[in-house]
Image (cartoon, rainbow over all chains, first blue to last red; front, side, top):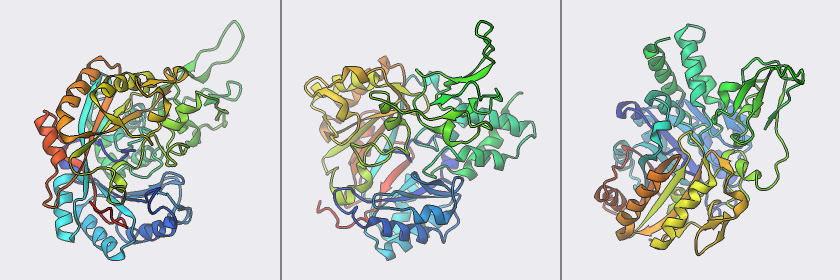
Length: 210
Length: 246
């Protein structure tokens, strides 16, 4: 489950794309973790976020915050998506103070995360890097489309849907913000960065010939 | 998944939603007189549930089916809402590095490798991952026992999967392993050879414990092997308790 890794795109764009999430370990600290997960979700709720969710209930585009919160159980995984590094730093500072005892993971620009950890006084404990895509890369959609679809690491956002909605934005049939929200719905974990999708949709629509 | 042809009004709203491009509009069949409708190609469908959950169909013609073995594997690997009975967590993977601060799964001197077949967005037959497992095991690679793919291996000596599961299509399946740091370069060579013969894409993930000085030996091993670590990564920030005593 590396659902927040392998996000593609321009480095500058990826600097506005952070996922902060939490998980308990089945064999170590899962028992009683549901209440702690609710607390995690409450803490992050104080910060401006572009998306949040839990795969069992859905993202903010599938359910309201309270419903997602109330359904956390032991072994739930809560996610928040932020678009700037200072918010991530503040959120981590509060999580450190809260000392919930759950594992916390941050996905995003690695240099920024390293710097945030130093500022906040947290270790870079374990790291996962993407080594890119091998094999039949000729079968992949164009870069900006891939940048959108890879924001759902479970692969639930279809490239064809991105292209269809980009056409509708281009023709003025749909606002880019509404199209981005539509793309967020299949991604149940809530790790889909909707603000970034909106920017990318505008970019695709601007380049599209027809 | 299935679409009831008698309820479908051929509006086409569901077609673009499918991540596997498995929904098509079928023209009217003059022989049977059946009207034009949307249909799901069952061989290409991975049972991810996107079309059903979207509630996009105005006639509620899209429905889920009771899935028997081995088709149920499509759902287990492709629908993150479905919790795999082998891992007890949603999705096709494991906790991997996300809980390493408390489990100690990835220790200094070792590197975690995740080869995700079918990602991004192409999908894979399980036999593609099987071919990789068969080639990696002779190199001394130890597979993650909790990974749902590992649990489908019929012969641990060769890595052969249960024969009936090989042709099942899934959104993605991850070959997860932990290898000694010094073996990483040789294993990556083999991964490149596997990728050259694959009919799908493979997203490569590399995991490593950081040192107290912040150094990440796994990133250095990647560079030595000619694999550039991505600028964006995933970091466990060590807030889990009780901390594993590394």
